[in-house]
Image (tube, rainbow, N blue to C red; front, side, top):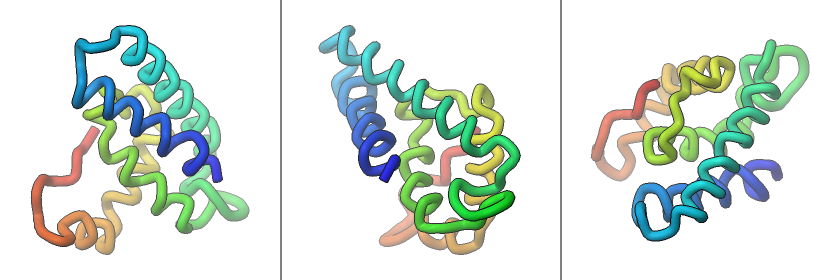
Length: 117
């Protein structure tokens, strides 16, 4: 629910104002960029001491991770350096390393490589 109510919509706004319409509204760029950074901090805190977002103990790979990964794979569009959020970066790299992620990223066809921090 956090992804659908916060992460997805807010990062979508960053894409709209920062990537596709840069320079048209400084207010919107700042507002949504700040919110994106806040959400990255929330996720970074959640991943502290965990491998994945949901599950017991260190967590387990679930639909929660799958639904968030595509948004985080556009960290460059959001002008976010994943190295500033080490737990998010490590989580991201764990998911990137999954064979199914590598295969899925090229469906329906290969367009670009998976962005790396």
